Image (cartoon, rainbow, N blue to C red; front, side):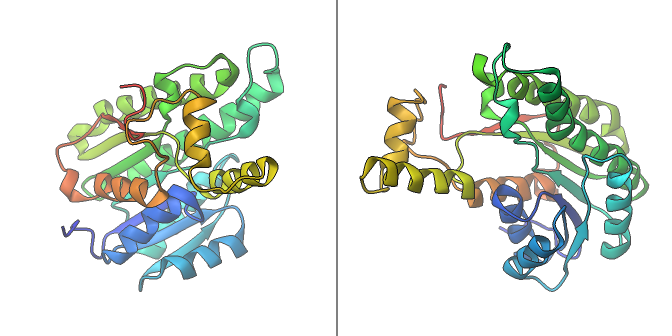
Length: 264
């Protein structure tokens, strides 16, 4: 299916790995103009090589820092010749996976910046550009965990829930200006970090990696996944690309699970 994104400009924040990289790759393959925003210039350039496409570029910066999101969006608009959509796939900080007693003020403050404010700053900078261009799309990243609360991930699930509320409010506030906003809630996705964890488990337990993560998910993490496996970044990237595209033209304000059917 042609997504209808050819020659349209898209900014992917967190596009050097995992779901963001997969999203950028799908869009580039469809002929879109893609800007990948990342903190590390070398890593971003390597990602652009992997993504391919005639019009894939790098914007270096950190949306967790004041003022950076405005510069990143402005640079992307100039490089791309306009902005049709933005996706933010960052915000997975490990310290935020803490319970009430272990989550210090510093942990909460870091989590707010990493999980919430990076997205808020990016969307705040991008929406005026989208409105000025006649409309566009916003896709944010929450998590399956916001629907299945865990006491040992209190900052994470709290702020991901806030991010979902933020996205729905953007959809309501700017819909008549042609801006759509949707929030994706991934489950267990085998990004580089989870793939490395699979290999680490195999080494520690002296067993083959095949099927090991799936057993741990079911038996130790108690994740009842209907499909019986983690997802792939490519599967999530295809969803992001669809939501960013004109093909999802009447879809806005949605919270969309992509979790293999975890705890229906």
